Length: 351
Ligand SMILES: *Cc1c(COP(=O)(O)O)cnc(C)c1O
Picture 1 (cartoon, protein in one colour):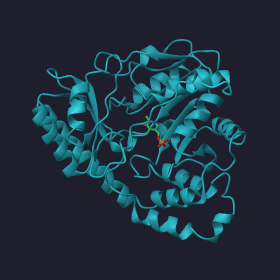
Picture 2 (cartoon, helix red, strand yellow):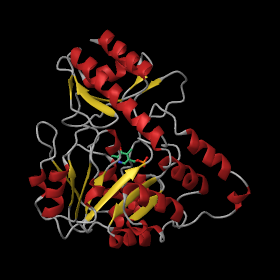
Picture 3 (cartoon, protein in one colour):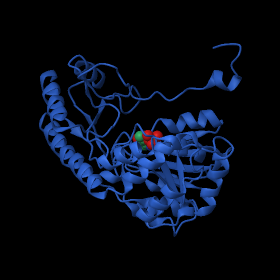
Picture 4 (tube, protein in one colour):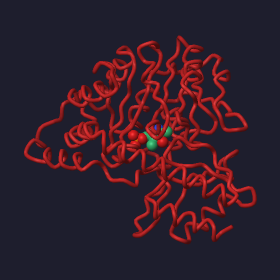
């Protein structure tokens, strides 16, 4: 606290990202990064862009990338909005598409950035409890609100809500924007982008950080009705007109042009996820069914925090949330096969 801070900054409770320790040889399974590198074509495209052109500002609207994404998802470019990571897209959503003054609904167990944005923009967030099985019940979203947001698959549970139930939530809120945060959809979920032409109140966000192995490049996007996209552009152009730099625009475009690499990486993660689920179940864990690149697991006889710190002393980092309802769980990112083997061995030695 300092006398120079605004009162709002005094009251902020910022998001705490997963740790990025600077220690070599860690088995780092705590921030849902992809064990595969980005497509070699992405690296090539970034190299090609890294020249004299960098003295020039990038295309403020990222037209070439928006066209590529629109083509990939079979929508029109004016239905696509780009951001510096999907976190930035989500920030603009909270500011520009939710009705401040009315409660914003999201699951009680979910991405912990949502309450942070509520704090930043001074809007009320209302956590809606998941069921005992950690599922979203669409009927819980039939109540007055200023907007609805949930990840699908949800984080950190990994559970996927079938599209017909997503549709129920959208239909129950025709006068409010419903945001489906699909950071993990490529690991086995179905995208609600298929529904955007039917519902002008639906906005879908995705990121290149997870399935496309580009967490370091910072590219995310939203797809929805052009009126929703226009609101996001108005906020963006009142904040930072050039959110994506030239390297990010070039690399992201190349990522969508290498479908084989993308498939290969997603399939590899899914295969390892199923192997990890089986191995941990064998060790006595309850593992929630995951469609993401992580699993959420608890052991009936062991404390989550103790397991996480026991693993840490073996150089294996997973995520533990000291929060009601999920205190017993570990969120374990699916890593490379040898990292996953280390995790299974490490956990086995602690039980
Ligand atoms: C990782 C993640 C994001 C943000 O990703 P960016 O790296 O900012 O694109 C958004 N939502 C959820 C649920 C995530 O897990």
